[in-house]
Picture 1 (cartoon, one colour):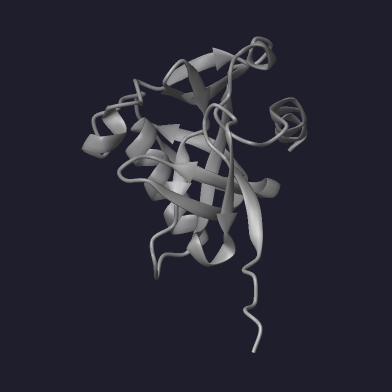
Picture 2 (spheres, one colour):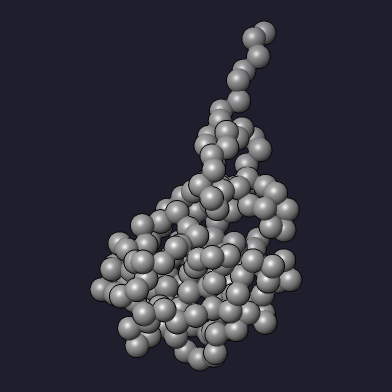
Length: 164
């Protein structure tokens, strides 16, 4: 019987380096992110020399909204009220923290209302503190000029969030 070739995809890392990966080597990772806008500013998590929205992977048995609230608090110290879904996208990428692995991620972005709390990184996991700094409120007009560590069209995402 002939050997069946495994399907491959292209995954990228934070520097947009491309990797051919067998689908059998992927890990599935649904993730949620909060787009929090207050006083014409968006709350962003500092990562390396850029930013991303606070959020991350869901835990098994955790609802999407529970995960959104937990991840947002862990990465920002801020409590939120989820509003509406702004954006959904999928991506294939290479993680290096806490260990190297390749994932097929479903990225769900919610507009969220700020409730309380001050931006801090004290609730982050230790491995996250190695590449993440204290979250910052960034003027929404300057957001299209900063470096984002995600694979979405941030200009369109923010424009859509502003309409909600």
